[in-house]
Length: 249
Image (cartoon, rainbow, N blue to C red; front, side, top):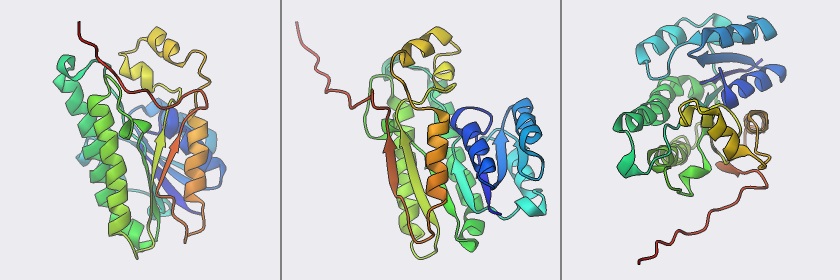
């Protein structure tokens, strides 16, 4: 039985990944900040399938305590799914809150690279895999995307850099880059404004966390000689934005 570590497993894509991998016969190390949601996963699948790790990915000390004390059956990690991340605010750069920018960078970039660095020796030893959750915002900018889009561009480029550095080790690396996925993501981004979240997804038939989780499982389950470098996904009703034009006068 293989073991996957999923960050941000208490909501959205991360929670869907935890459930999807568990149903597929993997052991799952589920990390997150909400104990009750981790406990619910354990209650659903059992402690022999789900091992909960309660910590904020930005807290390296708490992370290390949790991961350094994993039960023996969960200690050999075959796949890392770097899912934890967020967007805060929709304002243009000149009206954005610097504190929000720093939280996004600390979560989407610093925490991701720190955890990856910690687990790399084990992943190399087991010829495992790394799946990083980026976004179409890494490629297609939009007003208000500023630091969020930049952080996801980092994740994409970091994935490609890892892929290059790990050539010959047997470790596979993939950047998953979704478009609109209806989760708590937009609710968090809009400060808990449910109406704003509902308005964004209205009539779109967006992707779901389960859609992305099935894709991540597919990537992780491919034959060991096959690597998906990057995979961009959008709902059919979403496409590329047109170029902006600001007119004078």
